Length: 300
Image (tube, rainbow, N blue to C red):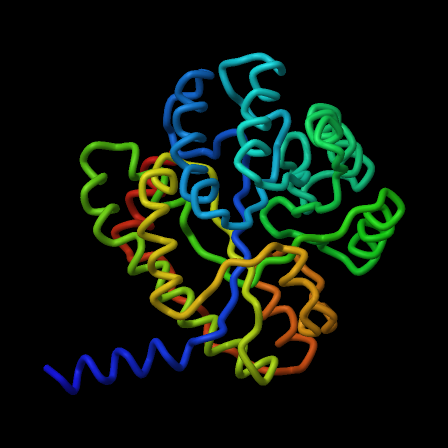
């Protein structure tokens, strides 16, 4: 027993100095199947943001202004103000979460611009401006030309790309969490799954970059993450992490490595850097088969 405790303390100590920036996509509410009226979304949002506000943890949310909800634009402004009141930053995730692989570039970039008005107004009221853009699905362009033109558009409009290193399937668990038959199992298994993701990318960062780096986590707005956020934050702390802003994480030299990936996939920037370096990495764990099967059935 003493040996086990010693080893655990040693593992935690070895992770001292780790950093993670938490980013949350699909505001005001992702596709978790929960209620989409203003009262329900406000309640979920307040619960999600409480630990960040109370513990002064940096956070950025990425907004889809056109996401399907049962309230008017003034309701979206109320939700965005809740995020800003909690000390969070906000970025653009496009208006309608288009897939760049399936639409003309002009339509895709117009959708980015269409997603700005309410977001820009909410930030301007706090003396802020839009800085970051998060690619829907983490798709950055199916061809080299489209990828380059996409980046030129973002540069021209003053956007910085918000990359992701800790990529995961939280949305699959979230869609099952709102179904009574799966809720208890998700509560039990979600955070351990996320810890397996974190451990995998810690190892990959050493393999690809040569050392651990400030990680950037992607998760989505959902009732599951609202309810289980204290447990998720505790997991990171147990592994020796402190919470940093996206801007702080991006100051690390790793984020200036080449991203040479061109194609229809969307995945962690650590995998992208591996492609540029010609390094073969071991994929991070997928959600277990029961989650994938139940999610596929629920999505039909």
